[in-house]
Length: 363
Image 1 (spheres, one colour):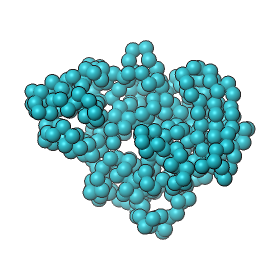
Image 2 (image 1 turned 90 degrees about the vertical axis):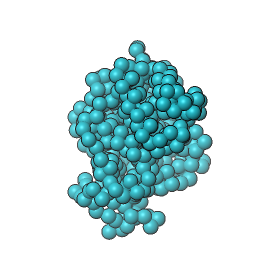
Image 3 (image 1 turned 30 degrees about the vertical axis):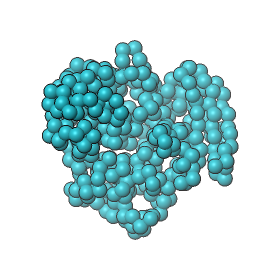
Image 4 (image 1 turned 135 degrees about the vertical axis):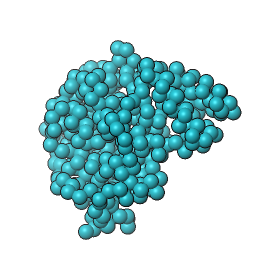
């Protein structure tokens, strides 16, 4: 059966906006890993999907380790349950080992040994500077020619972005804040395979092309094919001549009428190949939302299952105004439609929105 963009969107909405399963951990497990470079994104994303989930409940789930946060696939920060994070760590090992080895000028075996050393060092919570210094000392002993590479540039993150660590706020900070974190060793819940990586993506984002899975997981297409080979899948023809794979017995597609306030790096965008995100946004609007120069995304406005604008409630004050912007030639969100998503945002993020402005933007 051939699928169009609307078919793909409806299938993905059923997975990203399921019935509320109960606890915060169950909610996060249901929708898969959440990209959370911006720490508040986990709070906003859960509030948009499960209105009524509270800031306290999400914070407590982090505190108890029922959900964890750290740098994994593509070197990006994700929030997930420990079981899901275990799968992300496997994707990171396959997708990032050779990249880091090339960057540092060392062998694959040496990068594995370096990361094992970092994990052993982080059995107590460590600051980023402490971990960088540990990596520099390890390289000075085992690969002296590469020791200076970690002093600046992308290689300075080598100790922080391999999936073997989780992060938490430094003492006194809040989980939604952007303060300097500390890092500790992550303990996997069991073995994971490339088939697990592909299955995780399809459960949360499917149907998906091989390019979608590869972009999301930071894997080469040969690794994606290896993962697919370990699964029972169904395959459909889709837009752009790409084949789209899915797990059997997927949930039925759904519509999503009304308005949602999504976080930066939401899965409706970041779950898919950056060159083929048409299921939720037009290429023209995508260019407005995503800055290729720094990789940042504006928080998207979702109207009737399509991303048609963006919003802002900037600053760190507990009371702040909000501005909602919709793109010309799309449906204007009605003020009454914003009451429920704004209330969900307030509850999840622990803020009060003092006023809401609505603005039209020509793109």
